[in-house]
Image 1 (cartoon, one colour):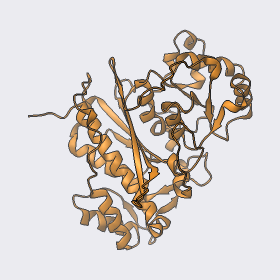
Image 2 (cartoon, helix red, strand yellow):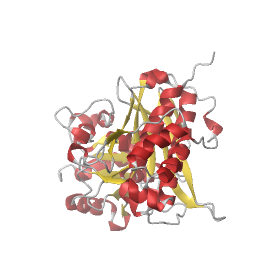
Image 3 (tube, rainbow, N blue to C red):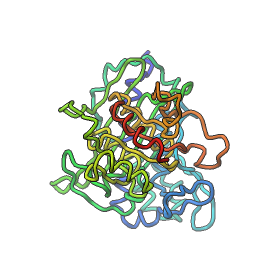
Image 4 (cartoon, one colour):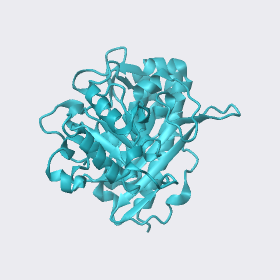
Length: 384
């Protein structure tokens, strides 16, 4: 009997991420559906950074679909699959409906119709996307041998990172090797697996549902990225930039446009103004570092969460980089071993409530090269 292992888990995560991307595309294609879906986040679950942080049914549906599909193939992971969203929805009648994926498409459609105030057309469109298996993805995961069992892992899901970009829906034609600051391509499906015991990220899958438009009129097509890093095994679908001559004086940095002025000034002195770039979405900014479109991503505030960083962190580790807690890097103990400051994913912030329990509170730096990371920390050390 074949026990599903890490290669099977990676294959499944690639598949469910593609399924999730398909749901995200369906929700945008059906404009009336999309209008219906948007509900404001309130109370403890509101991400303070965005005034309009929307909770979309698409988010919840994707999260629950991933939870359902992974739990079905890996029962030992049930209860260890976490997401950004609460799966309770309120419909127009004020009824609270818990969104889950049912055994059949018809049952899921019936449940979703309750959330959607009996809009059966919208409910069945969504249910069809949830229960449809995508074409198989990237067979290069075969033969992946990692000294871990799926039963040792937990998962963080961000169903659609950069929700605001997803909702605004601005379309860009991407060019190879260029960073595009905003638009649909910033919206990503992020699935990251980490060790339950240490919180160390070991496997990450990123799906970019809106990578390019099919010239033959077939709508949006996506692109996926994956990486595994564990016990001496580092393997990724992404190859490092060819030149290999990354000079520390040629540093390029991607930031949020709302980053503190003092950070922008320190980095302008270090890198030069033309090397500072701005982009939307935490996941997308880390993906820019993964792809070599920027060397470093810095965020000085605690406005990202474990579900934003877990998947791309695993990819960066597979490429020899990582994501560190910025505040921890300023502590003297980290000067000798900066890797002590790598983010972990298993422990909540005890004194916080709601989503903040899982915030990356010390800010972060995503990097591919440790030398570059050190020069960034030196430049910022006495400024923050």
